[in-house]
Image (cartoon, rainbow over all chains, first blue to last red):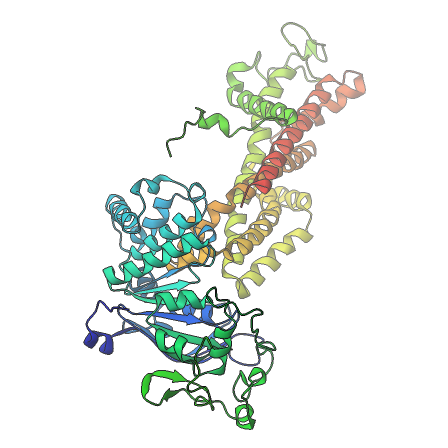
Length: 337
Length: 285
């Protein structure tokens, strides 16, 4: 986990700083995102993991203010110093075209099938910065080479290339505006394992070459461990635990993280049945009091149902934050026990 | 990437006619009709308005292959020149209703909210009002001429196009490439104009081709009633009206031929339009 940027810069200039983000959707009883705090420094890779519906995709979409209709966001999201939630439409377009870029889950669906790949890559540059077509195409060709594709692909249509290649095209498009922050929303989920490994290697390589901050949204814990410097675990719209990748996987402090790790299939330790987590995640149509995980938690006590736990640093490890009343109970446990 | 591909002229690859002889036939008919209308002034054997009362209601002859009508005018010449007004009118209706319908439908579907409600409800008001009646009303106010009925019918056809466009835009805006384009920093207007509208265009155009046939019937009906097209201008609907006396005299040819022309054109345009619509619907998305 080598950081290409000097540690001093890492501390002072986060490219993404989310503070107390709350997101309400129409016809829900409680916020979908409930006080999310998250930072990504330049050149850092942060993985956001959680099960379906935990709000990880909404968090990454909020960063570019790509919200569902009727959504109301509170809190502060700053991307390279700009407060995303208060930008004017024009400023927002500039931010989207340059500072921050997003890679989508299914490249086949996220690229207009009726336009050439070259159009897709150069469109943003041509429209937003009035770059001449020839210059934009030259840059697109260079970006294709940077992601390991031949520039001849510019003339082709999305249906003529494979899914893995198309995801590389997507990454090349994201790099066109020299972004400081890259948001990858389940970027490898729609791909087969081989392409997945290639894309992950590519992302790690680009991070060191361009010094881009990367927020990697995934539900694949193994992938998060392999790629990221820090991992944030989301549950029911809150970040329940965040820690450096090594510490989180070796010594999870939140019962949910521990349960997730126990439910991960492992090849090296055959263990028969997987430990599924009992129960269901909380329904969005019901109010929540206390810890959202309490009903499914083995170590829950009365206080868990009454008070919402705050994010506290684990003693002796200020970078390891956990929102649990009984964070100390799992002390000494290991994730893969 | 260096695989040997059979050479194929791209222009002809688009016309996929295998297993669709009816479509091919109708496409040929449409092409011939359009050519005949375009070249009518050079094709006509006689002046369509020259009156030869001595030969009125004469049967087919060498000089007049389709005979002469009750007013002593050459039927073939009137059919050919009449094709111009009879095709130009529906073309105007389709062009105008497609343009405005796409604008209205795209605005309603893309912006949504109150604008959608206002536009959708007001176009539905037009649905409640019969198109023919609207056309008769406008023609009686503005007098004769092709413009008034064309505009009136365009307004009557607008809701069909706008409703189709709105539903297509609603479906299209949910597709991930729209978000992806927005996230690249394109404005909503640019995404709608550069991505969404081109992608839904084939469906809308197929619908417009079908509308062409309906508009032709409506316009022919209007000129049969003596509305719109000026009395002396050759027009198929007008010819059917003029042919009534010939039918009573027992020489129906000058009335039947324009009727056949109308039916043939409408069927041809419908078959072609339906075929295009089917092909668009089957297209891999």
